[in-house]
Length: 354
Image (cartoon, rainbow, N blue to C red):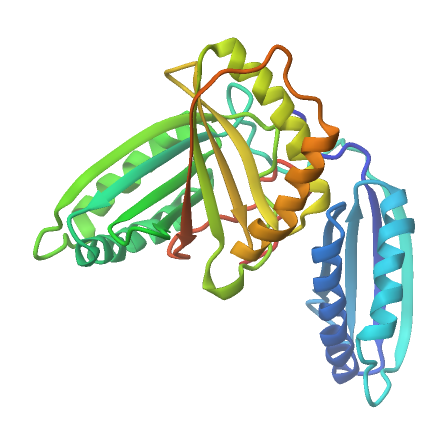
């Protein structure tokens, strides 16, 4: 796997000095609104952040990283133009002593997208389908799981995602999605965390009755994206998990190739599609899952349906036709008990903090 997701990115660093700390803070507040617009509208702006000087409170730098200079000169200028018209100016006016931008071409000698290179071409993913005797059983088990998720996040930097998703139709069902840089990170550090949790996190009392707890393992394909972190609307992202089975491995591979083209369209056109990835089953070569995560259900029902409509018209169908045995989507509401946005990017620089 490449050390960087975007070789030769174009970087702008602005050194800024303000008349006073108050001037800086008021300007920074307005800048934050423009940064939100940038993040929502410019998928090829890989990073855009404001850094306060640790010694001089009137100073700061802004670091912006673009997939190419064209992305700075085109879409970003459109965002700035829009911001000039829609984002209120500071009042009273801010006094800026120095605002000095400098442009750089990334050398790729070091690293910017530490992807904790995964073994076998992609991260290792575990998806657990869980059904509980009652909603109360699920909620009590979920509370305990949240404590373990906190331990996982604190102690396992190579656990890239670990989240609990409530089924949107059946309150007794859920999935757990866990993503590791490699299977070794699941088999080693994560097992240590679970062992520690068994000793330190109190069991549910009374005991929870679990009807089904079915884990399945997958290898990430890297055809789509996993790390676009837009704060979710309404308290939790909307997730779709598709379980797919094909007549043959060849059918799956040909369908997967076409799916990859649609995933590229999704990544380019839908900033609120936070993740969209294809995972090969590690045991059955005819099976896979697709995991798609949206900032809200509206982003699935609106922009994503437009993408699929466009793809139907522009992306050639498989020839000969693929035979699909099962294609079963299920919808979930993200709980926010765990984490999904630890930035070990598949595309595009560091993720936004939750």
